[in-house]
Image (tube, rainbow, N blue to C red; front, side):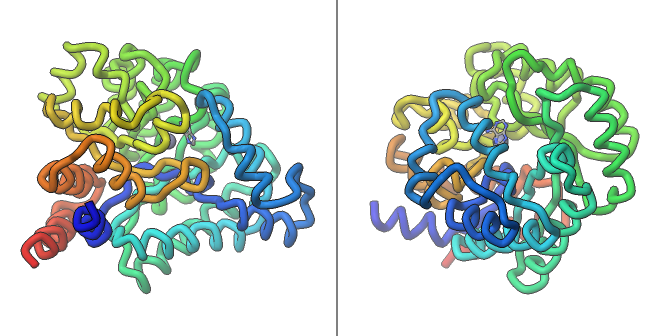
Length: 336
Ligand code: ADE
Ligand code: ZN
C-alpha cells in the first residue's frame, strides 16, 4: 500500500470540483474573523472541528454558509485561494477548475467584484509562480430564486472574461434543475459552459433534467444515476464526465461505508468518473486523501487510478492543446 500511496502522491492531477469557500480551514476562519473583527460562535479550532458532524447535505450547508461570513475583503478572497493553491501544489495538482458562490457573499453586502477579483488574482499568480492552470466556475445557489440567479448573472457579465462556466449547487432536494432552465439558456447565449450538481442527494430524474434541460457539459457528483440503468447506459455512451467526491459522499452520508463507494462501479459501467475534493476543509482531505481513501477501501489497481486521473485531464474545459500538455505530463510521470 505504501508504494501505491507514493504513486498517488506523485501523480500529476486535475481537480474539477472544489468550492473555494469549502477550503476555509478552521485556523483561517479564526484568522479572518480576528482581522475583520467578527465574533465566531466557537472558542477554538477544536470547537469548530467538533461541529463538523453532518448527517445530510443541509447540515453541512448551514455551517458552510456561516463559515464563509468571515470573508470580507478582496485580500481575504485572495489569501483563501492562495492557501488552497499552495496546498494542492504540494499534492502535484497541475490544473484546477474551481467554484465560487457569489450569492453567499453578495447577500451579505460584499460586492461581486471584491469576491471575483480576489479569487481571480490569486489564480493568475498561481498559474505564473506555481504552474497551476485554471478555470473559474460561477455557481448559482439553487435554494434561491431564478430571479436572483438572473441578477447574479447580470453582476457577472462585466467579469465575463474571468469565468469559464456556470454551475448549480446548494440544497438539491426540492430544487430541481428545471427551476433554472431559462437561466442556463441565457448563460449559454452568453457563451458560458455549464455544469450542475445532480444526483448527490437528488434522484436520477434530476440528472436527466440537468442533461436535457440545462444541457450541462459535465455533471457534478451524479452518484444516484446508477439507480437508473437507462441513464447509466446513456452517461456511458455520451462520455460525459462525472466529478465524484469520495470523502464528501462519506461525510454527507450518501455513502456510509467507503467499501461501498460507487466510483468503482462507475468505472466498470464505462462512466467517465473523476476524483475531486468538494469542500476539503470540511470533509477531511484534499486530492491525495480522496484518491487514497478509495484506493484503500475499494482495493483499486494502479490501472484504475490512472484511468481516474486521465479522466480528470480529459474532462477539463481546456483547449485541446492545453489538454495534450496535461496528458503529456501524466504520461511522463508514468514512464519514469
Ligand atoms: N456547496 C458546497 N459544497 C456543496 C455540495 N457538496 N453540494 C451542494 N452544494 C455545495
Ligand atoms: Zn460540490
